[in-house]
Length: 121
Image 1 (cartoon, rainbow, N blue to C red):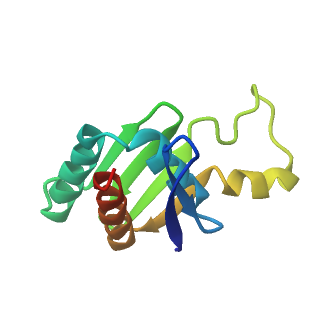
Image 2: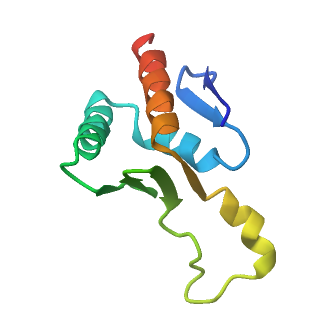
C-alpha cells in the first residue's frame, strides 16, 4: 500500500493512495482532518489491541470505517446501491474505488503518518 500526502492549491490536505486503496485516502481526506476524529479512531484501535473490543464501526458522512482485530475496511455507504437496481458486473472496477481493505498494522502506520502530516500545518 503506497500513499502520499499533498496539499491542494488552497492548502487543503489530501491523501493520494495506490490503486485498490483509494477509498482509504478519501476517508482520511474527508473524515479525518480534525484531532477529535483521529483520537476517536486511536481509542478504538487501543481497545481492540487490548481485547476490550473485537470490532468497531464508525459511520461517516460518505463512508464507514470498520476495524477488527485483523483488518480495517473503508466502504462507501452507497456501494452496490443504485436505487434498488442491481449493478452491471462491468462496474466492479468502479466499486473497487469505493471500498478498501488493509491490515491493522498498515492502517496504524498510515494514521501515524497522516497525523504527523496534519500537525505540520
